[in-house]
Amino acid sequence: MTQEIVKKTSTAIAIADDSDPFQAFADAVAPQHILGKLLKFSKGDWLAGESSEPVDHNASFVVGMHAMTTGWVRWREFKPVEHAMVSIGSRLLPPRRDDLGDNDSSTWETDDRGDKRDPWQFTSYVPMIADNDGEVFTFAASSKGGFGALGKLSRTYAARRRSAPGQLPVVTLGSGGYAHSHREYGYVKTPLFLVTGWTAASRFNETMALAGYDFPHGNESAPPETPTAPTAAVKRDDMDDDIPF
Image (cartoon, rainbow, N blue to C red; front, top):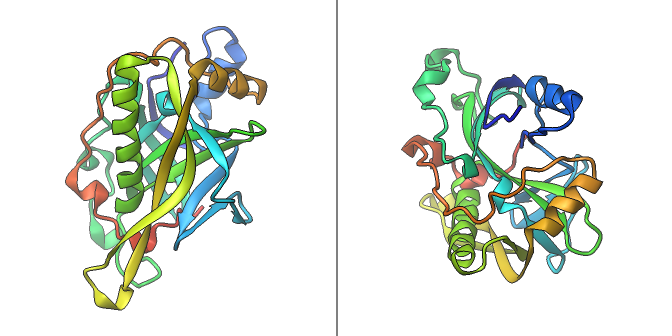
């Protein structure tokens, strides 16, 4: 039983398992999107986990690009309550925003600035493992800066696997930025992945399996095709780069 689309599920990248019926059941009713610790970029700092522990910028990570998902996350009271995601590798497009409901802006909750906020936020998740000890993380992007970082990394990955399929990027964490159009916000820092090398995807898959996550195999060499996100999906201000889990 393989799920390519994670349809509106309450809480919780869905990993398919074709051998264990109990794993398949778990994936169907409670798919996981955040594997290991949440890795986020907040105001120039890389932080991990519920306690927002600082992450060493010199630390290396293997990025599971073949397991990246993208789509929509529905928020209620600053918590994710539903997901409508697709695997990038499936070549499927995520649902259109208008098809998800909650289209009446008068019913939307307000953000910390008092502005109405669409409960459905376009988001991408990509799992990563620490290069030194195999600890599992998931980077979540829902802002212009986050998508920019993943887009640049995806182009590098796509170019690499044309000549060397079955490899994944090894990165360190950096930051870039730009001058915000509203001067009061000044210079806005954005996340950046610096590719320092490459490693076999099988190593990543085996490490994830040892950590208890069954992973899809054999699709690492397929030519990439990135789903086209609605324009509104990337309009979120980088001042709100935090994922309010």
